[in-house]
Structure formats: structure tokens, C-alpha cells
Image 1 (tube, rainbow, N blue to C red):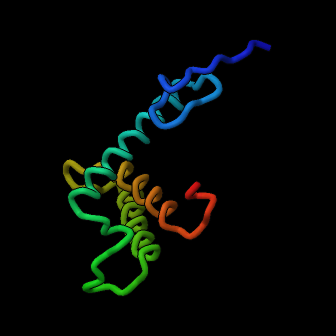
Image 2 (cartoon, rainbow, N blue to C red):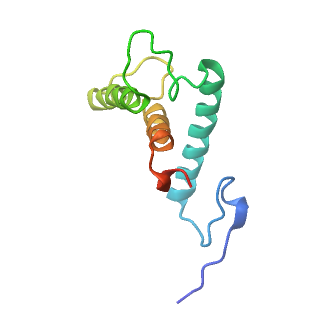
Length: 110
């Protein structure tokens, strides 16, 4: 069996894979980097509204509010509808990442 070499940090700016990664996973890493960049930009623009909403109209907790946003994005994906300039899948991945980050499960926040 051929040994796989490490590609180090050159393969991904966030992790250090121990083995070569396939072209599909390399593209997935680029998508995740784009999601991280988008989350950073939106967090700067909106504040930490996903985790700490103003609660003017809704008193639902942050997890429940994120789940509603995820439902909305899933509806758009299922119906094939989106607003011009919007990347619904990118937003959906971002909301799922935020959900994982704000849940009270240590395994997601290590």
C-alpha cells in the first residue's frame, strides 16, 4: 500500500491534514473558507445578531432563531428560489456552523 504524504498547511489554512486530500475535499475546504469569510463580514456588519439578537419582536432563544433561519434557507433550496446576488447554500452552511457554535455541546466547541 502506498503511503500518503502530508500536504501540511498548504492544503488548508484552517487544518493540517495528515493525508493527501482529494480534489473534492480541496474544493470543500475552499467553500468552508468562503463561508468563514462571509460569516466574518456579516458579523462585522450586523454585530453578533445570530447569537445575541436584539429580541425586539421575538423572544425565542438564539438556537431557535437560528433554526428558523435554517428552515427558511432550506425552503429556498427546495423551491429553487433565491434573491439576486444571494448564495443560499453558502448562507445555509454558515447558519449551520453558527448553530454548532452556539449549542451547549462541548464536542462542537473544542
